[in-house]
Image 1 (tube, rainbow over the protein chains, first blue to last red):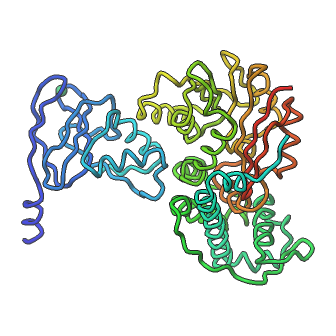
Image 2 (cartoon, rainbow over the protein chains, first blue to last red; image 1 turned 90 degrees about the horizontal axis):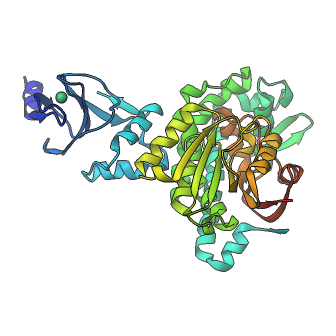
Image 3 (cartoon, rainbow over the protein chains, first blue to last red; image 1 turned 135 degrees about the vertical axis):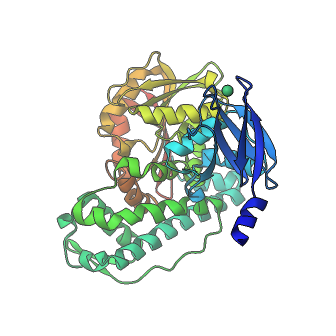
Length: 120
Length: 320
Ligand SMILES: [Zn+2]
């Protein structure tokens, strides 16, 4: 099945060691961008930034994430970029350059509260 | 008091930038008007506005703003309480980042226009939070706020000064104050969810130490300290009782302090922007320029600076 092959080719298993309790989770990512991850052992929220080669560019503990889905990662995407407030544009531009700015969770929560964040 | 055109003043200081701002304003206005006309025509409301008096529509404020916009733009004539359409606008080219950033707000807001005009029903605030935020937080509206910060002297206040930022809503005014001044900021907003949004932007900017928050209606706000300046950016027509809000501002500002206002008016670009505003949370059309002057004076301020261009007023007023 070509679709299946494609999926396999575009999917990567990533080992994430929780920044709080140290327990390791194996999750799969299949797209670049910002992802949310909640440690299934202790509930610590994390953000990870995945690049176009599905490499892990950043992985950090944060105070909150818009998605709460233990055991797996949730990809976070902006729904309508044209409506993103100007104050949040530098954040989006940084993410596109492959940088997750400090306090990134605040930008994601803001986008989420505006209804501009899709959790996949 | 010095009345003058902001653009003319800017032209002497920086002609290139003045012309660019003028072009940006003209593009925003032309785009908004073109979109408005398109939505009215497609929904059949353009025909109705030529048959039914404006006051018989479900939302009279909105119907009046729509008719006045078409008349001001030379697209229609007034014929008693109805209008007569005489030409259709052309879709304008957009070349400035301000217009490009603002245009999506009109695309989205005017989706709600036909229903609001006919029935008086506006979209629930929870449904248009992003649109409301973008209406205030785009490069064009920011340009207005930045000009106000510069022209009123907010930008000259020192680190020890405190500015009350009235009704920041999604936080654009707060961010402009943090970026363009050195002062501390008190964000005053009646809604908890707005303050939560402002707080997120402040944290993202790493400016937590400079900002404090007061949740209160503007008409009742009593601040923990007298402030050096009060900033009101596009607030007057979003407040149920702007006269009372201005009177409270007067009470909360130091004797040697001042009021800084950035406010669209019932003319030029202010008209189509008012149609979008009424759909996204404004409680009234913006005031006419003279009405705004009267309100500021009645609240106990004397106007020291009054700059007006493209339907936007930038004003500085001192307590009397
Ligand atoms: Zn853990």
